[in-house]
Length: 319
Ligand code: OXD
Image (tube, rainbow, N blue to C red; front, side):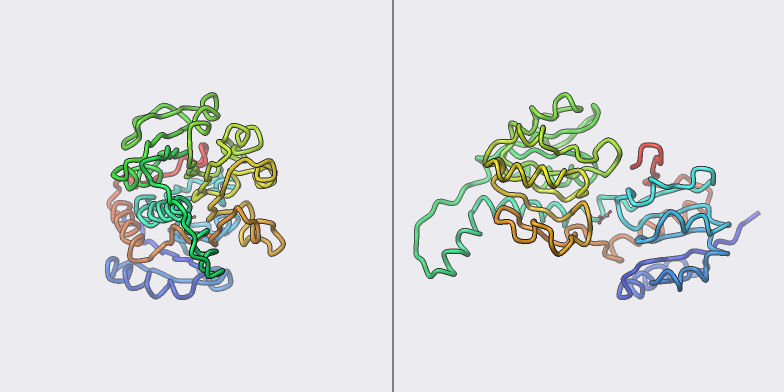
């Protein structure tokens, strides 16, 4: 028996929806697809939705959709819904393949490394002061760059950096093969040794019970004093108060942050004006409809053909 599917596409960004519609209506002409950019518009479709594709919704929505069987998260991260996942319901969770957003994220990391290493902030200061002063920019081959999290995105960061001749090391939760890095440190027992060897530490970790505030005062104490921390994963893996204290103690030269414990970052947060922080508002891995929707289409076709879905999330492991 063929079950007719009703897909709800939810994005709080109005400008995204026509772009998703363009890709999805062409690729799935025979499937009912509804689009919503506000919770009120989405609610109308809750009673008949069987598949939810979106982001910016809460796990509580899922309980209000009696026919729901499968959710595909538009982002690569699922930390905002797995914590209160309705485990008593038989609903499959998949997520966007990180490789679809990894190129921009890796380029962001490279840009931040270069910006700091070439001392471009200092150059901008000189320009402001009309000061013609000699300074020596660094070069990438002098650096050891450590990538914490060697999944789809961390591997892309390593791949982009590889030709630039810096030494590349990685850290991951458990033993597994890793391409593009010279050495892998594994587990909590090796985290401090890992950071101690890095000039740049790049965080590409998912947010789980195991990674929450993993980068805290104990770990910052092992950083080199002139280290550069870059976070493109999730803000909650850093203890932000401990990071500020580490700056006060002269540890870490700079943090380049795209993600924060609370987003949007509150206006009074010290990061906004901190001289050692360069920040962007969670933009480094944008969900461009043309890039990510084809993966959903492929999964819908697999679902309808009774084939396995790609990028299934293990809700118990939280990623
Ligand atoms: C994501 C993100 O989860 O952009 O993909 O944060």
